[in-house]
Amino acid sequence: MKNKVYLQGYKLKAIWVILALIIWESIARFSSVTSLAFPSLTLIGKALIESIISGEIINQMAFSLGLIILGLIISILLALIMSSLSIINPIVENLVDTCISIFHPLPGIALLPLIILWIGTGYKAVVFIIIHSVLWPMILNMVAGFKAIPQVYKKIGRNYEFSTGKIISKIYIPASLPYIIAGLKIGWARAWRAAISAEMIFGATGGKGGIGWYIFNKRVFMDTPGLFAGLIVIIIIGILVEDLAFGKLEETTIKKWGIS
Amino acid sequence: MKDIIKIEKLTKTYEDNIILNNIDLTITEGEFVCLIGPSGEGKTTLLNLIGGFIEKDSGNIKFQGKEIRKPTRDCIMVFQEFDQLFSWKNLKENIGFPLKNSREKLSMEEINNLSTKYIEMVKLKGFENHYPHQLSGGMKQRVALARALATSPKVLLMDEPFGSLDAQTKSSLHSTLLDIWGKTNTTIIFVTHDVREALTLADRIVLLKEGIIREIIDNNEKIPTDKKVAEITRLL
Image 1 (tube, rainbow over the protein chains, first blue to last red):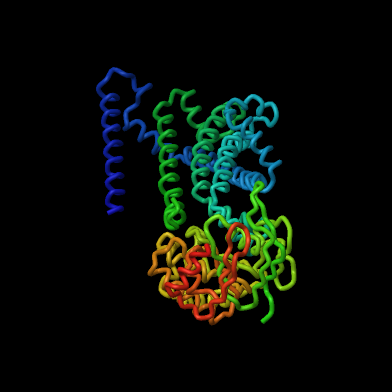
Image 2 (image 1 turned 60 degrees about the horizontal axis):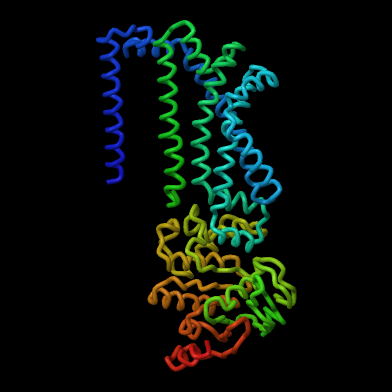
């Protein structure tokens, strides 16, 4: 029954996409809009296939994904350390709270001029922007998760004479997994945005690649079908990660444990 | 029988309210003691003090002659809450959890054998792979009991563990608990406000009211007659 509803949801989504594509193709073919601004699906498909065959789009995407994964891993580790220290020590909690208040509302893009000045325009700058975008919401979610753990779990940890490290690793982290996964989802989305924005600027000034740079480059040379091909790849990767990676992770953990 | 828990002149206050006032109580090895009294009269506070979860104001609480200052594996608590089981672990993993993380470094085979032994003891064979959300309230309390027993504690502290269960499930758990107590000879300190439950389980019933021990009743027969229930209820 559940699977049937799930499938119906997918079918409906597919219908919406097909409908949007039909409208798109109709505008491209039958309206007076120039193909430079509004290319047909055929042109976009052709540009996408050519990019895949030449390996250009795949290389750029691999470059971006590499930076995003690196940024995410560093952010997760930092968030784990800061959140854990924050629940152990009230002084650290205050420090972390202060950092969140200052840095969380600050868009990564606003830091770009400063980052160029301090780090330059290489991949390190992109990773820095990704970490800044991911770290703060991740800490917020982790700390919220740690604080939501039933008191009785903490008592059990103390009763079995676990060290603080063991209580965090064996009880706090698995118990707050719904919050951590939610943080990862937010982190992933923000990492994408940060990476693409940063690549568009750093790529243009430093000549480095990435899917952001790929899209920016296509616009510079007025290759609109190529630009849309880049966007399509971003959408596909987003759907795959959201539905497959995170979906599977939730299926095998929080849904299975009945805590979603 | 040797004394296992010795409480002397124990006092505990919360925001100027005296919860426990100059309590003296000695519990011997292998004894089953029920702490009974109206709600908010210090039963759970006393259990938490014996468990080392909270600090006393004055007096002594000793376990085998040593002052209790923090929770230890010698006195394991079974709580009232159903959510005391780890939701990310199945029934067998929940029971094996303290064994896997003990200082003794048991082998996987030993952990497996001990977990199986306690699963059978609490009559949950066949449910090993079930997660807590797939179990009933009574089954969850059975798992909590098995997990508490798995590390062979000297004292089992039980804080109204069957308080939220229906009469039939409660009765079945009483039989299981008495059966386990008979086999393991663990000292049990059990908090309840149910007089009939105390008369069913305990060797001795300690009546707590207004922060002091009103009476200690020997209960060797363990038959909760209506007369006895009425007598004790009158004292509460």
